[in-house]
Figure 1 (tube, rainbow over the protein chains, first blue to last red):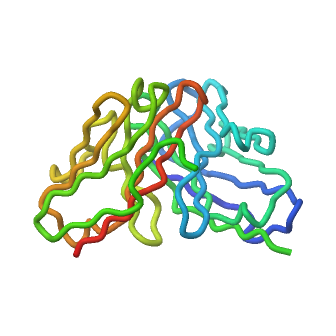
Figure 2 (figure 1 turned 30 degrees about the horizontal axis):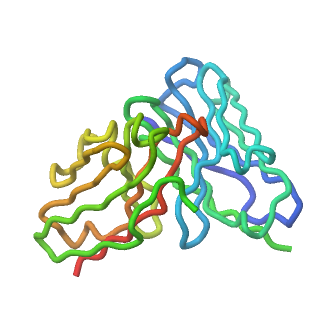
Figure 3 (figure 1 turned 180 degrees about the vertical axis):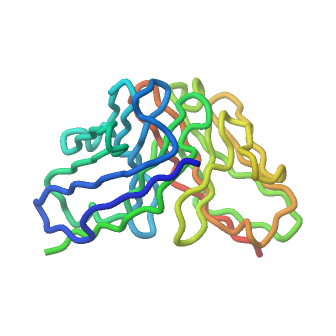
Length: 120
Length: 110
């Protein structure tokens, strides 16, 4: 059974760096053909892709946010970490992580999401 | 501005068939699979359709997906009140080397 859970601060100040952790179980991120993605959703708005890391450590980023994002994995801890620099109030959103089976079932399992508010 | 274009809203009465469109380009929908997600209020998105027209186990066969050229569609037949939700289309974009989402369609069951 695949499960994912996001964790991190609920409130960050403008200009600060956000660090979110996705802790998962039920699969290994040490094999190719599996990935973990981060997606966010501002209140009342659409879903937005942020970043994706595969088991072979290949990484993909949203072109519009690439300069601010870093995604890494810790295979031994079954965790994927996303950092986003220079946070702004417009970055207030629910942040989700998701298991990815590229080319097949895609983003098939999602965490519950964590709401991050950016405010001074 | 989303890369994939969906109508912001759709509606139907119980028992009706409703179709939601998703327009893209040759670099995403045109050359790759389309995926559809259902998001109920206050919950995480749920995979509804994968590989353009496949349903995960547990998803009723009232839901179906298709694609023609650079557009994909989600059809819901026998509409039920519990289908009232936001629906998103998703695809891989070869030019952007990234996942792209539609802007979402809010389905109302009248």
